[in-house]
Amino acid sequence: MVALGRAVRMPAIVVYLLCGILLGPVFGWVEMDEGLELISETGIALLLFLVGLELSIFKVKDVGKVALVAGFSQVGLTAGLGFAVAWMLGFGAMEAAFLAMALTFSSTVVVVKLLEEKGELESLYGRIGVGVLLVQDLVVIMLLTFLAGLSGGEGGLDAAAIGWGLAKAFGGMAVLLVVALVASKWLLPRPFKWAARSPEVMMVWALSWCFLMVYGAHAFHLSLEVGAFLAGMSLAQLPYNEDLRRRVNPLMNFFVAVFFVTLGIRIDLTGALGQVGTALTLSGFVLLGKPLIFVTILGLAGYGRKTSFLTGTTLAQTSEFSFILAGLAMSKGLIGGELLLISALIGVVTIAVSSYMIIYSHGLYAWVLRMGFLRMKFLNGKPELSDQITHLGEHLEKHIIVVGMNTLGRELVRRLVAKGEDVLAVDTDPVKLEGLPGHSLLGSVGYLTVLEEAGYKRAKLLISALQIEEANDLLAYRCKSVKTPCAIHVVDFSVVDNLLELETDYLMVSKVDGVKAQLATLREMGVLK
Figure 1 (spheres, rainbow, N blue to C red):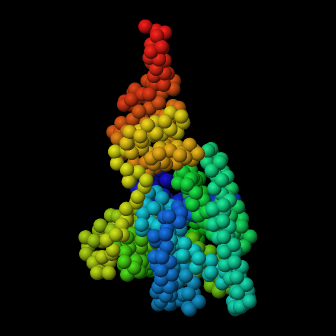
Figure 2 (figure 1 turned 90 degrees about the vertical axis):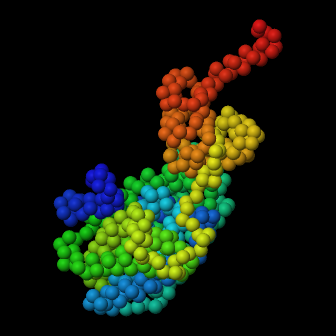
């Protein structure tokens, strides 16, 4: 189904939801069990871990304030307007209140997954969006704690239980936050510096740290998302976070795919037919009302129309937390089963439609401008605020990239810098990058994203000192594709034919160069004529 979806340019998340609906409600081939539940929860944990890995203090310090303001403002406005819409549709006060909460929150899973696919998770609007999602997660924790304090019998309030629950939740959050910050500064740097010399070991250590923090969150009765996010955030302060993020990403993609399939499996198609009209009306509010709220808030905060619009369209869906909140409220006897079904329908509709809105957000923005919308004066924005995604290599032009910091690579870096060249050294071992002049980048050149971050398309030369045949062949091919000259180290004569077929510009054949140097020295000594 994913292959068919790609053929018609359908977002993978929509395909997963449709796949789940076919497997579960339509054909009845698959039912939810503990195994599927565990896999889907693992996907959410890994996704939040990935979000945390993105949020180094350096990256979020410029959007922290606006994320707090926009997050809390949006929660209040969306909840109020959502309550009004639900009330006008004929729901009672309690039901309207829970529907309003279901409409308020956006999906971290959807947003991060699609922004990651677009390569715009580090953009200005991407960082603001993730910051708002974190604020929403804090509010969700408060609501879940509040619901846990409600007595199950008459649905009354147990003030003592609520107070104690809130104290435990926020106390546990404070403890985990302190642990994460202390660990990132004093506990994690030295062992991870050692583990980083083997990428596989570093990944296992990182996942172990992630699930250790998840276990800590469970011990404090917090959601697993909180523990996973704090684990990622603590590792984000280390210099290996980008390489680690690239390695965790494929693992996360698999588990998140199962999560969305299980959402489709849970849909009750029989009861859904009678709630289609209500669900579509409320979905329209989410898809149009929430972006308009964000455009207004961010515009008044001084951000331009493009940043405001892209942020709003990115967050135009409901969250997986909506199902959790509705399920807990139903277990307490506060709402009926039909509200849980309506929440699920709104989730499927908004996730499916907003996936297209996120993927084609730039084209959608251009269309909105052509139609004459977003002309309000408060959306002019500050000139210094930009939507550009900046990487290390984007600051470099006509530079030389040296891959592989063995003895040859390190000596090449030193001599090229001494000649006045702008040099970027790349290696998977942070120890080998220490003490080198010029710029450095930690990562495996097997990932195209590493070469893009190195700015290989704008480099005037790429040099590989590696002794890995497959990696050198791949580098030669990548350089040929973008017409960047490359010089490749040849250890064994058997690999020369491959590199010549790839039209490598220069081959550093150490054995030949060594023999030539020996002959020259022997001639200077008078041993040879």
